[in-house]
Every structure is written in C-alpha cells, then in structure tokens.
Length: 92
Image (cartoon, rainbow, N blue to C red; front, side):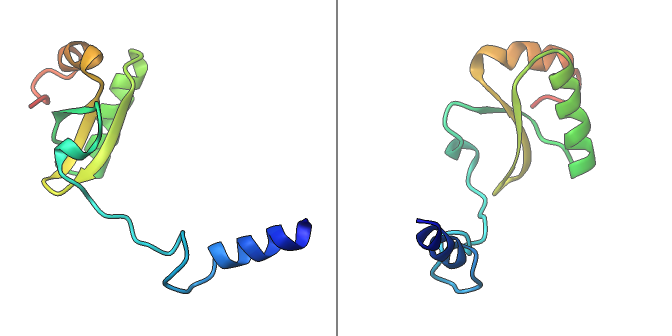
C-alpha cells in the first residue's frame, strides 16, 4: 500500500507535463467564480490583501482573485452590502 502511494505521489509531483499538478493556474472572467461577486478592483496585491484583511476583521468571507480583467476582491451576495459599507470608495 505504501509503495502504491509512493508511486502516485511521485507521478503527481514529477516535472512532466501530463501530471495533475503540473498545469499552470489560469485566470478566468469575473463570472467564473460561482456565487462570488466582485466588490472591489485593487490596483495591486498589497492593496488587495489590505482590503481583504479589513473584510476579515468584520467577519465577511472573501476571496482575492486574479481575473482576466485584473485583481478582484470577491464576496458572496449576502455579504456584498456589508463589504461595500466596510470599503467606502474602494468598491466597484
């Protein structure tokens, strides 16, 4: 059993192109994130993390995603208004 697990892990983490973990991440459109909706478009990663931390502090679940249109701070629709109120001047 350990041998089989070792072979699977070796295949998964190899540098070959046909492994599960070898693919590069790609950005999607703003609509490719399921129920999440964009509420802010930070200009850089540092700003995005600062805004995400402000939402974390008030208990709003969020995701900082790199979309085809750039960085977007995304939340669930139920939290959108609270997020916009917490980020005046930053929300879209």
